[in-house]
Image 1 (cartoon, rainbow, N blue to C red):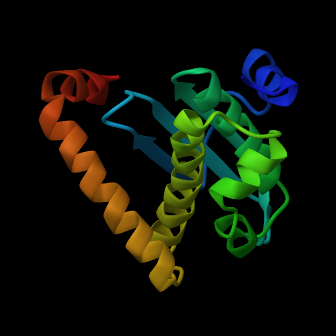
Image 2 (image 1 turned 120 degrees about the vertical axis):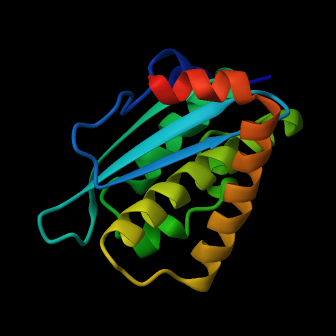
Amino acid sequence: MYSSKTLNNFTNPKNYGKLKNPDGVGKVGNVVCGDVMYLYIKLDKDKKKIKDIGFETFGCVAAIATSSEITELAKGKTLKQASNIKKDDIVKSLGGLPPVKIHCSILAVDALAEAIYDYSKKNNQPISADLEKKHERIDQEKKIIECKYKDWTDAQSVH
């Protein structure tokens, strides 16, 4: 059973949509359930805090709700603060998730981590060991998805 906040984030997602000229983009997916998330961040003029954030998610109720919720949790935070958001923060903020849907909160955290990693890499910013390790794990998962679903991922790269 989903909480009313989860259902509201699904039916009325906050910060939905692709940002123009984002500073960082995170793309993650889950090979088991098929959810795919894109998360976009734009920093303020001083490049200190997340000024704007958006997402596009192909997935279930929990995937869309967790994507929406992480954007609310991360907006206005520094990159370091945002990178400290955990799956449990999302689950708690949503009022809980069914155990079988907890993986969606992990995807949302990973999408944000990848957007932060993307920004940091493009701008020669220091990358913490934790963020580097998380990126390596996510990158390995992407390779599995790309290998297993080559026809589909090839079609997506044209998009």
